[in-house]
Length: 96
Image 1 (cartoon, rainbow, N blue to C red):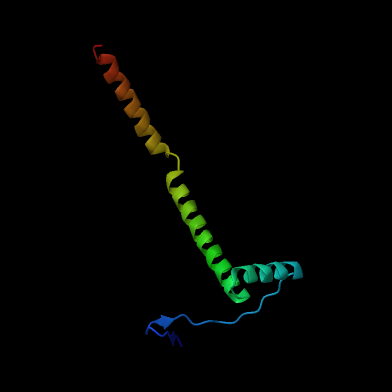
Image 2: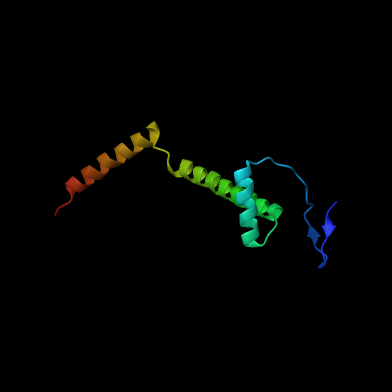
């Protein structure tokens, strides 16, 4: 069930989770959270949100590259070659 914030809007439901980290990484997280004046939980949430956004951007870039990175198929090559030949004939007929 969603909670209602003070302004009357719905807040997202929080879910607790447990993760295991190497001690060195845990210490670095604790230090950074302290420097940023946020809880470790908030720091993890920020990090995951950032990771998800970067992953979505990577997927979008892959789709864009796939759309613009294709090469002409055989039919497109045939049409392009025919156009080049026609263009060449037209140019040869032109008086300079």
